[in-house]
Length: 361
Image (tube, rainbow, N blue to C red):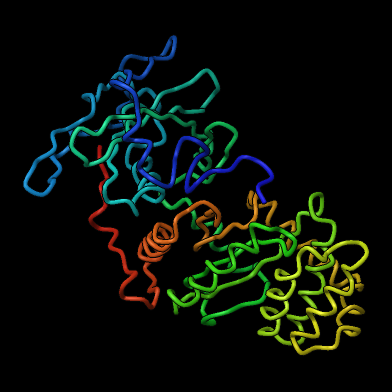
């Protein structure tokens, strides 16, 4: 269930999961605007983008589709072009057809806030160029576009990856190692989460080296029984990790019965189906220790800016599970694993990061 606007593998409305936006731009891209009062030359330490190398397209050669880089549009000392390219590669590098160039890194009226302008296209003949822009905070750790604030840097997902390795405490499937970690944030009363379970089952099969975690994020304002369902789930997990997934499947299958009249019996029936004592689990779920665990899981999701369910964190890279074609999702996951130097365990899913376009370096 979506509860606010969200980035789709990047920044909201600016960075999209597919390259389709690059093909639907209208006309020629505008020249970056020069802020009032800005210097006309870039700082000595800042180097603008180099000319684009010709891209091979089978038997054809695609000429540089982007406007020439003008040094006067590089007025901010940071971030560097290299850092912006590394950031964009982390977001877009899974798509070998996408190309881009950093056309401006400018000072703004806000002290130490930089505006980055990027032109995007693809390797298709006659593909149009689309300009996009975002802002980088003074500490260089976040990018802002629209109402989205996301991690920025040459390895934007590294910090969140460490947080999840340390704090994700839901039921697990797959390998014990957390080097390649898929964390699903979901709500047992969320219809979209129910629909996503077939995707999660397939991911477990397709990525045998993954450490897969179900992390509870009950959206209590929307789903009144989600919190109790999460509490029952933690108690089931404490008794038997694998039983959790039998329990959660039973709850998803009977979501319509999570009502004030039948909700308690529905949860107890799911516990029974998982092979455990429903009375013992109900007692456990009512304890403050279990409520604290559910609250901590909600806090974790909120702290890392998960604002829709179901959401999947792939080594810290947050991706909405609804709306991304499965093959695209697999490609992104494989690319992230390759970027982090870990094996997915699936030779067919391996993706090289060395051939991805990094234009303007």
